[in-house]
Image (cartoon, rainbow, N blue to C red):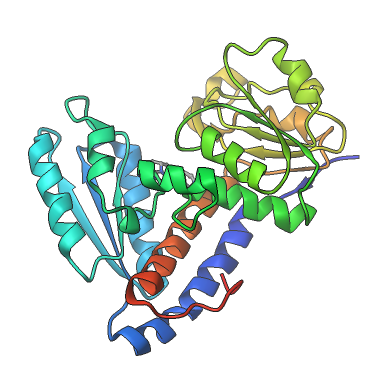
Length: 300
Ligand SMILES: Nc1nc(=O)c2c([nH]1)NC[C@@H]1CN(c3ccc(C(=O)N[C@@H](CCC(=O)O)C(=O)O)cc3)C=[N+]21
């Protein structure tokens, strides 16, 4: 039996439509549209692509998109001053500073300068803390998108064994917190974990967020498990006997995993599109909260 393919691209398109449908009521109440501002420092090609697609998706949802492109040699003080201006601008509901930043800039200092109530990435320590104690705040987009896909697929997650491979601040750790909040039994595995294949084989839900192409093999997966592949690795096609050029692969060996898992997200077309859709969702929620406009519970 082969796994069901979880269509993150289609789920994300539906979520973006739901967000767009809630914009007019906000505009009627607040007299303006929700606004997302993205700040990018430097010329990294992949980052430029993501920033462009974020801008397009924001406008397609009926929201106001603003992008600040700063040169790679921008000083930390100048970046902090821009964030201060955006914090004070009432038309800005969400601020996203594209990561990674150039080495001369301290990411933690930059994130700490963003108003937590505009931190639609959910990276500020205040939002990390809110997630940890179950308070309302912003949850990082990629993990929240993964939870949405899991609940759509499995319904109630309580009591399931979840293994998160990877412990980054932007995916692994918040993913584990969210799964815990859904009453899963959560294990965080990483590069020092002993018998990683054995740990993975216990998972009903396996989340791969390590950034190592095709590391997780078919025989690491419990038959019928739900596999969420967060990895986006661009690899040289020729290593795989291909014609040249590059292609995207996840952290899971998809060809092997699809023969064992119950369901699996593909790369591309799985978790990636959810990240942007949830960013729009967080921006909409921010706008409603900041203006004190009621957003029906469970509506998004
Ligand atoms: N402050 C900050 N917040 C972020 O959320 C953030 C960031 N910095 N820096 C860069 C990463 C990367 N990221 C992605 C978003 C969408 C796709 C996506 O839509 N991927 C598609 C297509 C990928 C392609 O074809 O290149 C897919 O997986 O199907 C991927 C990656 C957000 N990031």
